Image 1 (cartoon, rainbow, N blue to C red):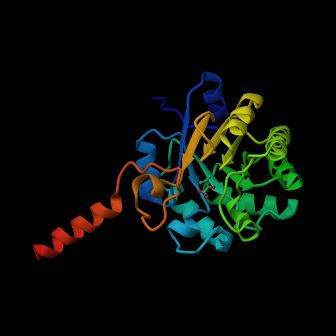
Image 2: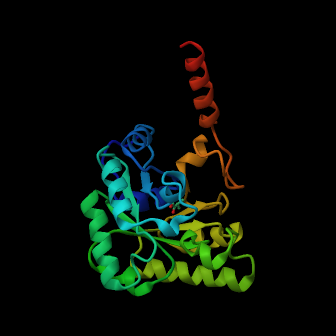
Length: 251
Ligand code: KIV
């Protein structure tokens, strides 16, 4: 395992070497430290924290203040991993807002930012400000109110071709990686083969350059909802309940 700090360039080099980019979310100090000790090269303070930490129904309620608070906590772990933060809902509607808010997340300790969709002027402004940027296409959780449900994108030829075009445009605009969320797996494979930057999939099949999961889904600390494509590796909720029951019984 490498011991040097992971940079955006190092994430790109992993694609070149054919090394899978294992990425997970963390929203606080202990999880960021644990994942770093596991050698995870990319840690995302995702706005999924709205659901799995803050108890909101979706990510559209997450504020910049909340993101900064959690980025600061994760950054205190001083991970070797690249620490990426999500720009929350409507925080990058204009190029000016995108740069101001991306700078706030960087000041809080993030080393790169991610934003959903193809607001190309905002993406260009972030990249021109020298802030490493990860794009995110496919099913966009911040659009859940318009979409109505989480579903696979790119099943029709037209939608698949549009996703490929979006990915190419985002690479040209300077993104150093791209998250493909719930993208029809043949389309995710085609995007991965076409782009020079790494694709990081979630629910988009096995052919992406890396995979990202909400850590709570992987370890079972949010048992009330688990996306269909997840195969949890542990049932932490059950273990917590057993531990508490055993402790209570011996009082
Ligand atoms: O908010 C998040 O956690 C994400 C990833 C799951 C891609 O955007």
